Image 1: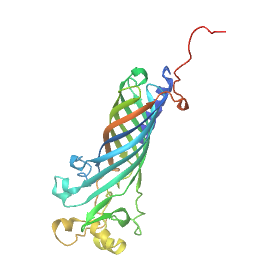
Image 2: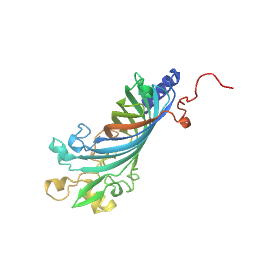
Image 3: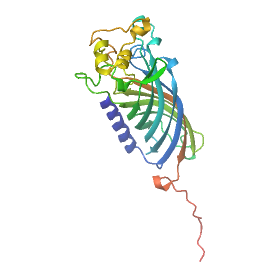
Image 4: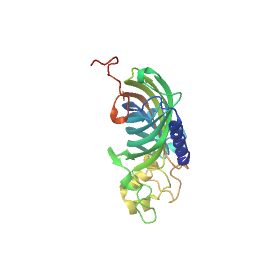
Length: 293
C-alpha cells in the first residue's frame, strides 16, 4: 500500500512538471467541515461501517498549485471516531462487550491531481474533479465508559502491554496513507467551494485499543491491576455475572492488520493569485501609448 502511494505521488509530480505552464502558480488556503467514521475491530470485526457512529470533523489546509493539474497540500484535521460491539448483529461479538471513542488530531501532506484541470484565474477552468494521496500522522487516545467514569485505555495495558513478555504499550501516534477524491468549484477567481471524501489506512491496529489476544483475568489482574482486568474482558459484565476468564492467547481482535478512518465534508477556500511571494501573476498597470518628451 505504501509503495503504491509513493508511485502514485511520483506519477502525479512527473505529470505536473511535464504539463505546459501556461498559467502561473498560486496559493490556496481554506477550511473544511464534515463527518468522520471508523472501521476496525469494534465495527463488527472490520466488516461493517456503522452510520450511527458518525462524528464531526473540521480542518484547515494550504495547497500550492504548481499548474492546472497538480497541487501539493498541507493539512491539519480534527475528527472523532467511535465503535461498539453493541452494534454487531451476532451475539458472539456483542457479548465481547467492548467499546471506545477517541479524537484524532491529524497532520497530512498529499498531492492533488486535477482532471481536466483547475484554474480559477478569470474562471478559465472553474470546475474540476480531483484525486489525492499522500502521507499522514495522527494522535489518538481511545477511551471507554466504565462504572460511570470515562477511562483512558492505552495506559491500562488491556492486552498485557507493559507486562513481562507482552511488549511495550502501543504508541498513540499512528501513521497512515490518506487517499480519496473530490470536486472543486471556483465561485469567483478568489473563492472556491468543494466536496471531498477521504479514506485513511492506518498503520496502527490500536485506534480502538483492540488488536491481538486476551490475557487471562487472573494474569492481567496481577500484572496491570483491577481496572485493566475489568476492561480487558467485559463479557461477564454483559452477562451480568462475575468476570469471565479465558486462556491467555485467545483471540480478542480480528485478523486485519490496521484500522481505517474516513473523513467527508465540504471545503471553503480562497485563492491568492497575485501574490508575488508565491510566484503568482502580476497584473500590469503600466499605461500603453506614445511617450511624451
